[in-house]
Image (cartoon, rainbow, N blue to C red):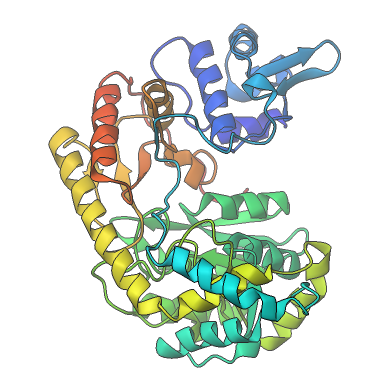
Length: 465
């Protein structure tokens, strides 16, 4: 990792306390939330000190603290490499090991899920004559997914559907098909972190489409970016956007699709949260405004995150290109999970009603707890989705994440959702947890927020990486 790249990812790292300690803590946050991974080699001390505008002594002391804490391995002549304590590999442990884990915006499994698995197990023997390598999806599942779009007013044929191993897999397939080296991709700012991971892994230059809880999508900026840069693709979540919970209004859906169609930009609409309506009501799918819009869907948020079934809805020609590329990434979607998904799609209205009930309860509980214990934080109340996007005012959420972790609470700081270290003063808090868990989590946040020092705001870069 270059010093310039690390300096950008560190963002607004200076807070109260010794500079070497806050620098070490911020690197540790980047490692824990996945922006850096085990095995990354950090820049030389002199290079990083120049990039950050601090003394080499400060960087050396920060590296020494990371080594002492088990997060850095240094070998003479080979530099310093990040590592997770205990020899763990990957970007972060599968489980935080903490009593309260608020790092995932997920909901409990749908109550009818176990019965769906049992029915699927009974049906499976009829499919064992199949070779098991299913690259497009079972016909009955594709028909059920197409019917769900028909019910929303978007005519869809089963051959416009490809079933994938979750929506993240679908996004990877599309990125490999639509993106070519050197091109640009337009993404919301803030946005879903693993989408950023996918695009960064492809080496894409990212353009920011600002989204704020107060004013929604900056459509003037979006139209300007598309007209000037003609990105090959744009990724957005038009319904109950993660992390803000906002929804793109009808007029802006029309404006955005028209701008993209003029410049040949493929809009990829992530609808994994589209069924998480609490009290908004239906809006037309983005794809109803243009036949060139590609839609990603999944049952992960509605039924269960462990059900790794997603899909792509796209023009037939594009799906044919994706199909040609797919064998280089995987050899098909498991049949058993597709049978489960087919059964669940028949219960779609019941699943949506059940989820809305639980999410409304959790949202209202969390909003009330924050108003009682941390009234100085600015809370936008969404009408759907899984989380609140909170403006903490002067509190660094990276520092807050470290302090909360010491008290048994895992949270994701705001910069994980943005480009160039943006959103240091923002926090995503999921509300699909039990009331007692929410109460305990807010109490911890209230306690540690009073101990986290504030620092002057610096404007982060927001344009291109």
